[in-house]
Length: 85
Image (tube, rainbow, N blue to C red; front, top):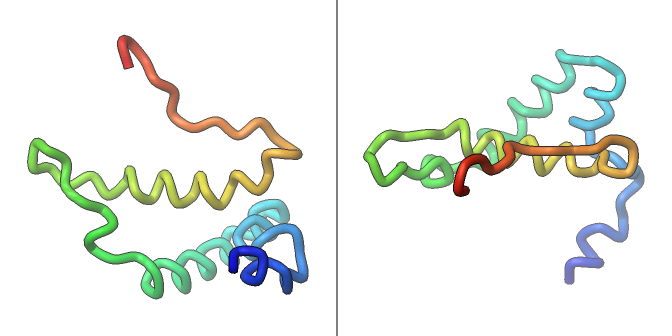
């Protein structure tokens, strides 16, 4: 099933990555404005146990997922654990 999803891919990178590599911020925004409303839910952002909503965590993970396609060209790192984490 998974192979079927990706077997017809015409390019190695998605539209967001292509726009980023070309420095096309307008196209990056266009991509995000199309993808976000069509796929994100208010449930995706969740709530922190303290009751504070922290949607930036969800978006951070989403963009990291987009950028991981560049791991063969760049060293992609996210937030690193600190302290006892």
